[in-house]
Image (cartoon, rainbow, N blue to C red; front, side, top):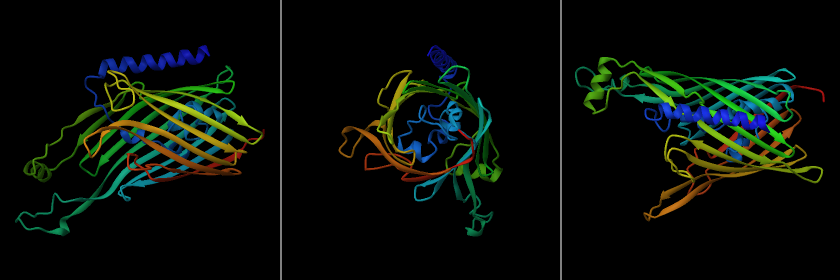
Length: 362
């Protein structure tokens, strides 16, 4: 237990130090496409995954969880859309066991809007409207995550880290390259599991560059838009703490509830526990399993206070449900989110697939 406490203390210290240094210059929300979540299992449990995750998706949720993979190779895929298909969100990952104590993984995330009309050349030099001059471009964010996990000679302990490379582009007008680090730990004690995940522990830096020709700049000025300058965008650290417990209900039934606490250090946010500089956003999920074959999931998160149509301040939350099916080395998961009028989730229906290859003999 002391190893887990030491790891947790290191993550808290790192996050607090970086925020103290850069909290005055960094925006509150940055690289938010990396906060959406991956995998229908996680989304069905309201993203309560930092402790629960035990497969290839751990490269996103908590790299320490990669240490629980029992296969030589795992592959995961996910595709989702929202706003009637305008925005597309794709995820793919592969994990490979290097030796009995180490696992490596690589994950790719893309969040983008394609076929955006570019009307800056709509009017020609003579003032005529020419629709043949309208082109299209994409605005997309890419995340490339390299993960490594290891199991030390301490029973129940796993730790891991991520190296993230970020590429964001808006057609030919702007692009950014970014770099960041994550670190995570999991610790099992009996039927209990404790975990911590530090996202962007050293802060993540995006260097933006803009390439606007004179015609585009002129259009920006005529339409009252500000001409952007090359800049540096900083994503501040976030710390996620988790606790869960495994319950056996007979020989074939089990239940695993988990609660996560997302700690941000950039001032007051619209979450359940508002503070300055620390705000806490809790979310709770549970998974019921039958013989490691059928899974039923649910979760609650995204608790906020909003003003309704009657100008009254009300508390809202986002419920989530999901199911999963495992057949030999193949697994398919489904999640239904954004249920009811008081939810603001990005997704409605999410499917994800997982393939286990070269399963090791027990």
